[in-house]
Length: 130
Image (tube, rainbow, N blue to C red; front, side, top):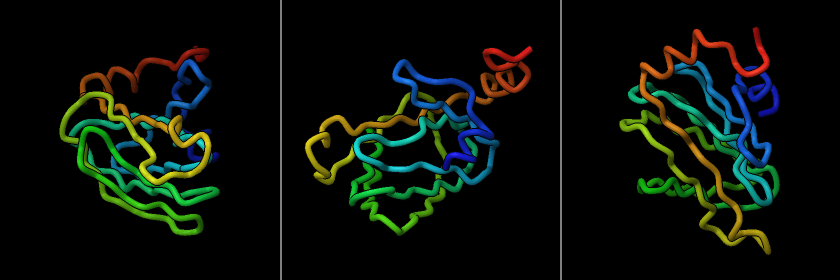
């Protein structure tokens, strides 16, 4: 996951969580850990990705809101899901399997952008680059 983040990070949220924009059609990695989903993914509408979901520590539940995608994520088992976002927006990820005292804080995000925004982002340097 760290190499994936290093290769594709385009920013951070207000809490320092990396925002990652992987290449269209690539393998995408999302890790569950006490108590967050890591990193924030930025995907392109209408494009297909292979989403690898794993837990670094405990059993977690992956629930993508407001869709009806619910998965159980166990340590040592990588789930691979083919995902094609069909609308833009911000989709929340919540843990729906009690995982301890910080369970209610365990949230993540997938941002889905349109192709035009993605094309503009591809030619615009990231913050700090010239």
